[in-house]
Image 1 (tube, one colour):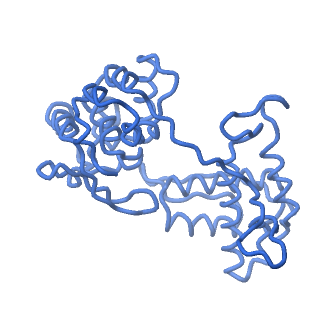
Image 2 (tube, rainbow, N blue to C red; image 1 turned 180 degrees about the vertical axis):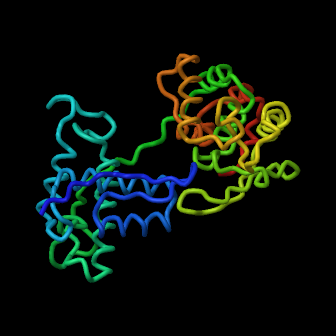
Length: 312
C-alpha cells in the first residue's frame, strides 16, 4: 500500500490544537510530540514526516533502510545545478542540518512505533551510522549519515545594528529587537514574554519556556527596560486582554498577541529599509556573544559599556 501524506492543522481560535497527516500511526506520533514539545518542534516534525513519506511513498511498516538511504540521496540531490554547492557545508542540495533534522524526525517516529509494539515494525530503519571501528580498537568510530558543520554564528557589526535600530518604526519593535540584542532572547522567547515575567527593579526577565522547555532568568541592560517602559506606556493598547508583552498595534487583531509571522514581517521590513543583505532573529540574539570581537568604542552605538554585558 501507498501512504500519501496530507498535512492538516486544526485551530481553536488562534491556538493550534492538532496536526495530522492522514495515517493513524503517524498521527498518533504527532499527537505524542505535540503533547511534549514546543509548537515549532511539533510543526517541524510534521513537515519532516510529510516530506519523507512523499519521497518514500510506503506504509510505515514497509519502510526499510534502503528507503532511508534513497531519501537521503534525494535530499542531497543538487537543487541549482551539479556544480553549485554551499560554502558553509559543501552540500549541493538541502542544508546538512536540515537533512539531519529530518532523519531525526523519522527515527523518532519509528522508535515510537517500536515502543508501541503493535505497528508491525520490527526495527528502526534509520541507521545510527555506518560501522567503522576495527576489532580491538577503542572509541566509538563509525561514520555519521549526515555530517553537520560546526560553524560560528554570523553576527552583525555595530554599524549594521545601528542602521537596523534606526529603521525600526515603533517603540514595540525597538523593545523586541533590544530583547534579542541585549538579552540573547530567541524569537519564541520574545513572543512568549509576559508582563509578569519582566522584573524592572532587578533588571531581569524570566523566560518560562525556552528551548527544550527550559526556564531561566536573564539579566539585561537597563536600556531594554527603558524601551519596554516607553512601549507599554505609550503604544500598547489599553484594551488588550492578553498578558503577552508584545501585541498587535493596529488592524483587526489589535491587542492580540503578536504572531511569529508578525515579528518576521517587522524584522524583514526594517532590514530592507536599513539596506542590510541579511538580518535574522538568530543573528540578533548572538550579537552579545559577538561583542568580544569588537573594540570597546563600538559599544557606544547601544549606549553600553563592556562591563554591562550580561552573562549568557
